[in-house]
Image (cartoon, rainbow, N blue to C red; front, side):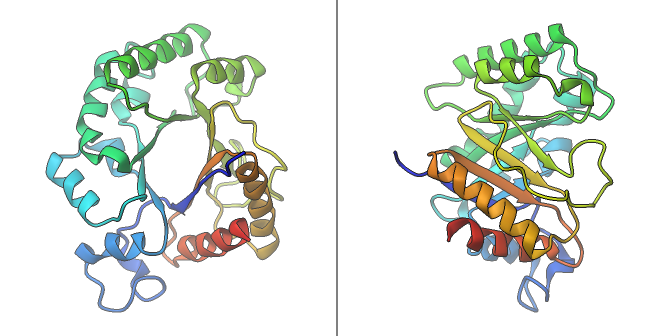
Length: 255
């Protein structure tokens, strides 16, 4: 069985506070992505949550990165927060059209739901149907999708079964919904509750100790050995703990 691929990085890259702790002194904004892509294989982008990217922006992102680098994009808030997953076919189509210029550098699209969105079977069924319909029209190259639910009503076998049938990954978040913001979980899960053919993990803690990183590294190695691709993104912090921990975790996962 071929081993899975690890796509590991941080949530965002354009932070002036990282100049010194991560970026070399004197690094300009225009040079950040190129340097970042030399250290990590992927980045999670929040820009697309609030704005629609332009073709020139997509081309600039592609031009600053090498083959194999991928961008995980957060879906536009119009889909998740305004429409709240209802009747989203047109919005989904516009979003995928806007990010299409990334071509092979387009990684998973993350649908991060608002914390007050509760599970409604009809709404989730309708959204997954819209997603399937848009995917069918978008061409032969399949997209990868992940969903991050932040209301506990989604934590059911029924929801996981529906995502699995649709091939959509359930986002694993640490700390989990309801946990103290910025506080890492006590330990990494031994395995993922996978629903798609890949794993999507968001580590939102502020500064992970070595034991915690070792735990996540072991979990990633187990998934990679099973042939599962793993996408993992650490939180942005002004002190640049995100890229520091990402580099340590990358080494541990690949050992």
